[in-house]
Length: 438
Image 1 (cartoon, rainbow, N blue to C red):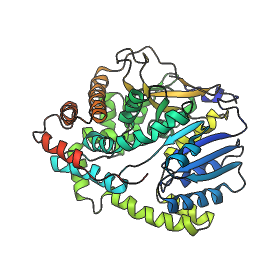
Image 2 (image 1 turned 180 degrees about the vertical axis):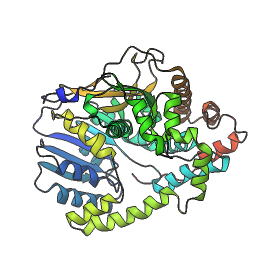
Image 3 (image 1 turned 60 degrees about the vertical axis):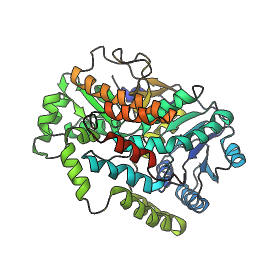
Image 4 (image 1 turned 90 degrees about the vertical axis):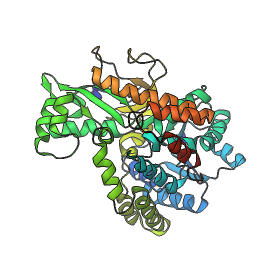
């Protein structure tokens, strides 16, 4: 795949109305002001109206306040909405883009998802493995209610999913609401590619690459510039590094993995690290959220920017923000890695497999980058196929609310396939924590 980002020209955009309307479901999140901080840094902005939807009116008001302060005189209007039927329908009416970023269960839910797998010597994560399955099981009933309204009021909107577990949710939405245009979005592959290019001293817009994976579990198995093999060069750069991936790992696989594959290849050390951490990540973020909301409720723009810097939110400046601007016709030197159906992009995979596929925006439309005809390396394809099989079964279990299928999904996952206590794990997932908040 050749980026050729420098060759892109400014285009008319998919949304040609005077004002683009964006609705953010889960707009009361502590990180949401980071989107407005990113947009405020753009020299030229089209007219945009953004509605933040959430349950907590106090938090929503704080986010709206901070957004307006950060935007200054930018041509972006912001308001908020609750989730009651009439209010939600009014917010969704005429939406061009709906961004789903809700966290059902709040940080208590995330804490559960990231900690209960440790009992079984399995890594805890809100979007992967049993933790991701738990998050999906808890979140889907509430997400479905929201998307029922999207499908009725704004069926023409592009639905962007940021919530975890991303791949499972994209598949669930496609099964349940086939009329919706839905994609999952993540910045990690793009930032990984940028880091590789920076490490070896080349411009990311000048490289050719091949990528294969699902959300958070992906591989660059080719990165080149003319005759330069940048994967080999990156391995040499990392000879002195002790972090993942090591130079030896990159050389053995002839590929660069995204960082979450450490949970697969170094699971024992990750489990030990998670068990021995002073405070679980979810509780750290919860504490930080309280601090952030105190600042965005009363602070100055500079104070708000400082508070946001404590919780890095790269998905806004490296994925969501650039994609929104590209859809409006702006020239953005970014490749978007979207979780979408395979639809023949990789001939070895099933048509409806949800894969992370690189896209650009051309004439206001999302377009997959052209692939090189070479096949995905067999080892990478086989490992990734096991994660795809898990997501397929997990989605069916979540949609049907069938605990037997939950166990079958765990049996298919390479992290849990050999665990004898899977019925106990299933009970933990289904009992979980009570969902609350958007």
